[in-house]
Length: 120
Image 1 (cartoon, rainbow, N blue to C red):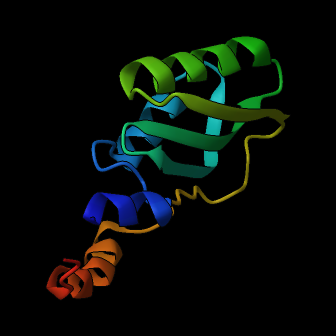
Image 2 (cartoon, rainbow, N blue to C red; image 1 turned 30 degrees about the vertical axis):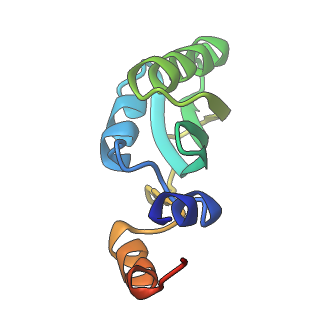
């Protein structure tokens, strides 16, 4: 039941560290900022991600998007990937933001009352 609730709440996958995903995307040549990063479960074994990436003015945006897809699909096993890349000059002034749909602590707090429910 816990897994079903996690999917219905579109929680971030437990096997993915959002900070590591952000660091990996920032390591792509030409990337200066990663923001609006959102990870969620579509099914128990199927995950999706949406992310905005800012690049330096002369970056090969197609290569950046391709590399981001490769990292997200191959390293993190995320099947549905949406990457929006844009050139910035000077480097983005946005403060980095990383958002998962629900923090792990919050999920545990929300699921705790369900453990005492008898469904039979």
